[in-house]
Length: 416
Image (tube, rainbow, N blue to C red):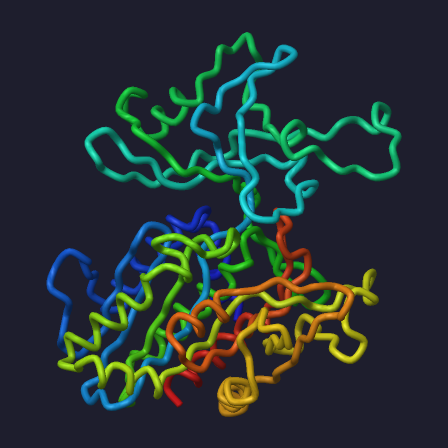
């Protein structure tokens, strides 16, 4: 258990942005024997494991020797809420050098204050080459001292109050120069970038019995990592008849509408080209879809002891009690009776306890890639996840055992 969770903490540390996460998953799968696929080349048609990266998304699939089944998909997303650096970032105010940022997704803004933040993502140079960026601790958003702020509630202005400090005006700071130094190029060589704030503190196991893990970006690296581990383990001695698929999309936190988001074509591209490479025509591909399924794996809400009234009174998922099946009558989650049975049967085969989440009628819930995937492909889909506290905080909380159970349950789904 300790070694596995230590690996999860390492994975989080190695994945400060969606772009890093996609590359780390691809690298680990390649180490496990998966071949990297170039989208511009001929699609592979032989049995075996394959992986491709498009931007901040990663797709992987394992083709069996005898494919007569469907696609079994473990879906997740690589991105997390934060603050994105604007194209013209440098400005000065009251003797300070600051960085202009834009809110990405729905972060709990006050949790980003008084933390040493790094910036991570991708940069593209004038020659078209792409580089990953991790600046290390570089900026900070300082709180206003309590003596100067006596109001009862702190509601930061999204434009004025969340701009990080990077230096003093007298330092004549240029972010382009800092970024160029990190990339070991001249500033003029940088064409564009996508960079997001990241809590620089490493994940840590804590609490009575060391049952809890606190870290950033566990919505949704908790699901990406578990899906990757399950696929690697399932592919080692797989003798089934389905193609096993990992789909980790980007841009879920802002609606998934991009060329490598769940509302885009990336997963369908992989499934369509794989079916065609295996000699299947359009009619046969539609038959394959009818035999396929997707487990949409995204973080779930644990009941909060200080805000229990925000939860449905008859549905109280709790950290440490197993993965959560997420259900919503208004299709914010894709789960229905058929797909719930599919998932919870896999949990039962793995000996994994399962919980169910339904939202309080007065507290609307979020959504996931599940409904989007089900709508695009027309396949049975269920929404699940490990229970989590502090969702969308700069630092979130999960249970150690839940993470391990999620791997077991996903493997049972893939091989069962």
